[in-house]
Length: 188
Image (cartoon, rainbow, N blue to C red):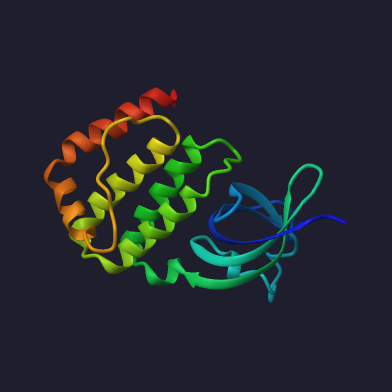
């Protein structure tokens, strides 16, 4: 019998595998970045469909097979997709694509999940003028975890988010240069 893993997960990407199944790229709280198969999720009326849409946060049950992960259950917690406007969804898509391009296929680092969750929350809570700064900060935090940036990062907590984002906005050019150096260092 295979071991079941129950964890929080954010669906970053979804792609068809067969007529009714889909591959889901999940950013999990405990297992890091994984690719999993969801059987029959593309059928009309599928129970797991709404919990595994792109940019949803769900409680998932995962099974590890010989070659891959399989999703056996999911309960929707937050649909970030529906909370974000079109511009914010595009920004979130850029950040998710950035992570998927740079991170190894399966990365066992739970910090990615928390950074992405906080980024979605920032896009929902903060004024639009701070979203560019939030995108810069999340990109640098990803680069730091991947070992592609060694510069100083401001410490962010619930009390100083606006101040940190305003500070980044003032020196945005330097932060973007660091992001570009990290991308160059990755070889992509």
